[in-house]
Amino acid sequence: MPIWDTILNTIGAEFSDLSDIEMGTRITLRLLLAALLGGMLGYERASQGKAAGVRTHMLVALGAALFVVVPEQAGVAEDAMSRVTQGVIAGVGFLCAGTILKSERDTDVRGLTTAAGIWLTAAIGVAVGVGYEITAIISALMVLFVLNVIPSSSDKKSTQE
Image (cartoon, rainbow, N blue to C red; front, side):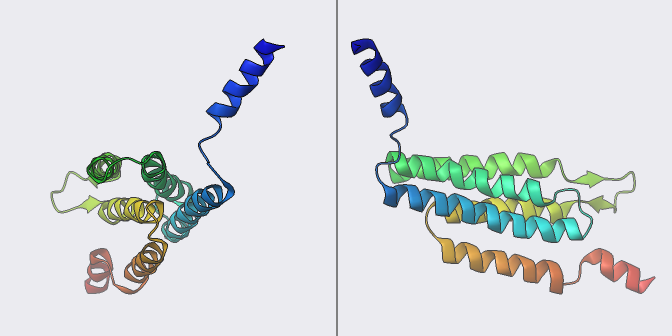
């Protein structure tokens, strides 16, 4: 029987990263909110026919939140959290670069707004992940305002032609 006790204790220890119900609720809320805000931004992009839609934005926001929730949960120092955040920014920047397409004409570049939106979605995920939920919600609302109210340069071109 001692072998089974050892196995059960080991399994229990491996799944003990949430110390209490309060911590579990906090982390669940942060991850859900990040996914929800990312999904909201992704829905706007998908409704505009853009390639990076709901799932992409949800995954970016959720991933960014998770990248900062785990080190915070582990109690890393502030300078280490800064490095984690820098890594998220650089990694998402690499992802964004893949959404930018340049045609043979030097003036035709597509995907910049999508790239910026993905980058900002990651920032919103980081904000939620470190506990700045209201800041993240305000930021998401501002993104929606920019995407829906401010005309794009391609809108100006089509109205001038």
